[in-house]
Length: 332
Ligand code: ZN
Image (cartoon, rainbow, N blue to C red; front, side, top):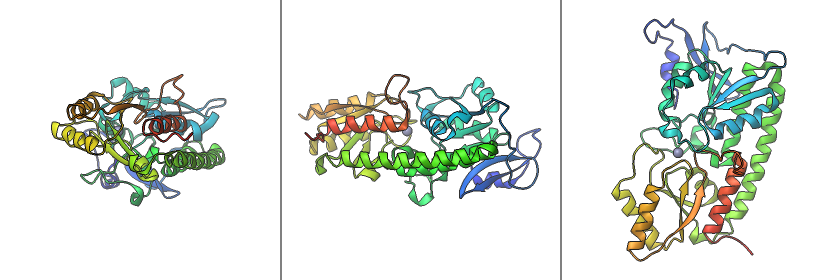
């Protein structure tokens, strides 16, 4: 978890000179919102937006920022810490980030350790400001393990799971902007319907790929939830984080897989170096199997302006079109 609940519940003095403040996870609608509390009790300092003003929300990644736009609508002004194409696992926060985080009315993170090095800054911030880690609203039973007691953070490519995050966000927004509560909940419900429809469309397109060809080899393990949702075998050259380089043994294992299954294509990602995928293709070619480049997938970042993949919905549709074309699933 990005925020360690046992520590947060301790209520002890933390850090030199920091006034002890009781911190708790506020339970709201069955999910967790972290609040900085000056007094006992579960309460977030609520702030009505200034007249004509908007709730200032800072999202960590483009995926999370899109969720804030979907649920917050016109009541919120969203900014995003990491630009499109940035890898959240290896992102190094800057001093300016600390200022931006401290001036937001609500900080929205994915959580589940996606934000890597930013996580510590978020932990510190959560002593003073409302922070919500939306992916941590997903029931633990629905999460995939990622080793070391962690969970795989790449939940957004299962639209059905992502609905939980919209609901959690609506409640977090309602706490900092109570007069908008109804609107946030209505928008989250409408967005959940959108995600259900997206799920249905994706499922039907993936079913067009021959069953034995439903194998997705990508640069890092960002598509395990996607694979589970749609019956695709997913193999990443790197693990669920990009923080450690893929080793030779990982590459060789995948070369064997690609060659023995005669896979037609492997994929690169917009936010991850394509070095390991290039090594994989070279290895397969050396064994007499030319594996194509299936295209570039959006993984931990949505597309930038003009990419036609600026929202989760459009990025997912773009990915599915790329995957279906490369794996021979396009129906006449
Ligand atoms: Zn990732």
